[in-house]
Length: 251
Ligand code: SF4
Image 1 (tube, rainbow, N blue to C red):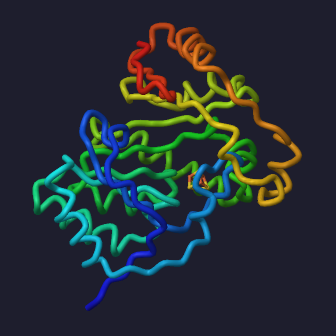
Image 2 (cartoon, rainbow, N blue to C red; image 1 turned 180 degrees about the vertical axis):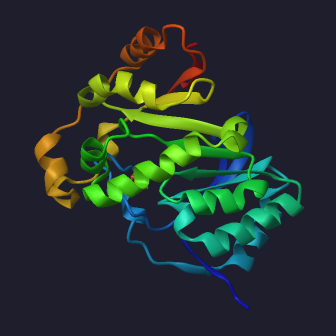
């Protein structure tokens, strides 16, 4: 039986997506969110069906140069059948594997668990349905469901060592960070990453509530992000920042 994957893009060689390992990254199309700052918004409604065997051939060719494979998006867990098949294939070859997810589909993450080395999950806002729906461009019912799934992932002890959490930060979101911190259990790596204004989607593609509440988002300077993370850390360990200069451990 042929399995297809809706593929939006590929980065053949990445040094930042699989912790200290190199990786080929596949971007799977489609996402239930419409985030204010989505850097990959062109992938959200993309259509490009590819036989998973073609992806496997690309992985075969890449394995000489990389340590592993990352599935990003869009939201890769929206395509559980090809995702599962490809993760299994990578693991049979002894490659490291990772997914980048918005956390919306706990059940899929759970199913893929034995084939995953890294789950890189966004926590985009405090886990409160009003603010989550605004930043993610979804209605409050979908936000509630997303929050429930994210909480399950954050509190699943089996995921602990394989999980990293990322929050994309703009000036307008700075006040949210202390509440986000309360939602992330201690010990999990938390990466505060710089948001870039030039990559955000056009305003008219955003949900009305998002447009009203955050009509602009403003980029922070690298030094400001570092200071912010230092102030936030307190006695909290495992806070990182990610900027154009790379990853830096703050605490
Ligand atoms: S979760 Fe948000 S940022 Fe990520 S792909 Fe979907 S819309 Fe874009």
